[in-house]
Amino acid sequence: MQDPWNPSADDVRTWARSPDPVEPCEDWDLALSWARHDPAYLELAADDACHARRYLLRVLYLIVGDAVRTGYRTAGRGDIEALLVRADAYAHPDIRLWQRRSRDLLAGRVAFDYDSWCAGGLPSRPDA
Image 1 (tube, rainbow, N blue to C red):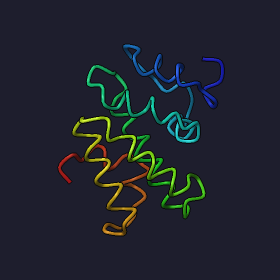
Image 2 (tube, helix red, strand yellow):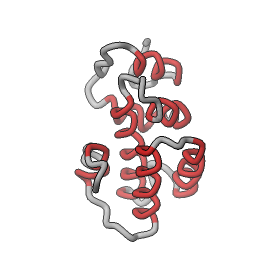
Image 3 (cartoon, rainbow, N blue to C red):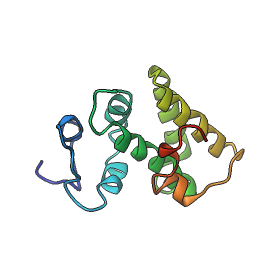
């Protein structure tokens, strides 16, 4: 990977499928949220054989949470809604839970909480 702050979708796939995916730089989750290779993130987060599956699920939560936190300055509401629709192609229960939680957040049925959405709290709580 030439530049971890500007990875390609193939860079992300290669990293995620490596046997021991270690972040190539500090705050790589932020770099990924800005790179917006959403199709790759969905594909990998829905793949139980992917070593970085849970990490990329966390990136999906971060994308939605940061958009809401910033009043849709980091990603437009329409972009977030389109991402949630694209996720319909994945039947993985973690993707479905992320969609439901995200739609609840966008609709105002749940309050935004930084630790839950941007610091990895929700992906580690599949029963909440």
